[in-house]
Amino acid sequence: MIFNVIQLFLLAISAISDIRKKEISIWLVISMAGISLIDGVLSLVLHKKTVTELVISLIPGVLLVVLSVLSRQSIGYGDGLITMAIGVAFGISKLFAGLAIALFASGVMSIFLIVIRKAKRNDTFPFIPFILAGMVVSMFA
Image (cartoon, rainbow, N blue to C red; front, side, top):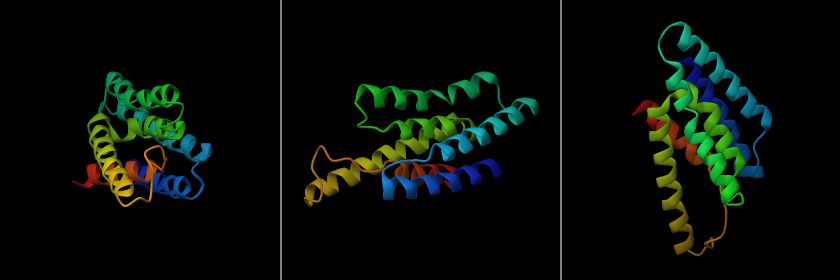
């Protein structure tokens, strides 16, 4: 649980950076990955998770990085890297729930901004704040 709280704190810092600069510090991503690595090793040693579970929890992040490449960064690399970095600490079920909430919320926000003419269809906006919101809900719901 402590690892998840630390991850949420770092995710909040990343969300602020994503909103302000539309970029994410690689040091935050590395810190998150390091925390997930420590959590993963402890989970293996304490027999709480299997190697398969840890590897599976990386898949959503890998898929987002691939989508980033295929979409010419409509989805930023940082979104995928952060998803990969937090995957092990949160686990696949919480990660999927958090990402589903994030995708739904960002879709609703996009439609709202287009309807009130504050954005166009091709505009981009930060996704990490939505990941943060989704992960908070999946953690405490």
